[in-house]
Image (cartoon, rainbow, N blue to C red; front, side, top):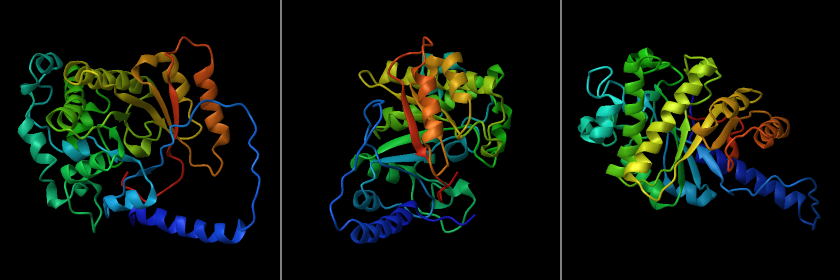
Length: 315
């Protein structure tokens, strides 16, 4: 699939809107808003990363203050980081984080294959640069990163991770917990990229995005992932709070309803993708899931705009 840099697409869109506005809104107008207020918007305007170009000035010019980044095994653990499936165990890591092969992690975010952190996308004409360059620039510019954690991508890579898709064995659970822990620890403890927003997989209800398990498997996966993320924060990042997004499903899915009933404590932000031109109906449905009496933790917020239309991006 041909890819384009998202900021360039947005720049073109804004130019069109500017022309339209100059023609259609020359006179003053009155806008009336009616209805019941649901809450307060976070006022974040975001983008999903592409793979052709990265220029932090594009974010500043366009007013983009949130960036969704595809982390995961396909990007930073294309091979088992220590070559031994199932080790170290969760207990080993909790006892001593040095059980993880940090030389691997330091190298993979510094020296990606082919000189591009997007090497794994399978496309040509990729942006050349590493994760350190990108994440440092985003952090210094005050752009909030939403990091997606996934065991496999839409091409079901890396191949070795098939044995933990889903991680239903003890060895598989060790591997995934280690990966989630290592990603958060590498980016926020060994480095300081200020990432506090973590998304659990991408459209697991859509088989074309790689997830190989059932809804019940995903619920267990979300619980395991949240445990690893929160362990890093509780142990090494006192005073900071992670935001965990799930189930990151497609429009019309009932998975958000199921997750809020089955594993409400695994996540604090309801994340859905709706590709319809009018997202009102499904967003209202999800909002109703959130507000019904169910014993669910309070403070949950809808994240309905992480992906609301098709765009050119590595997926």
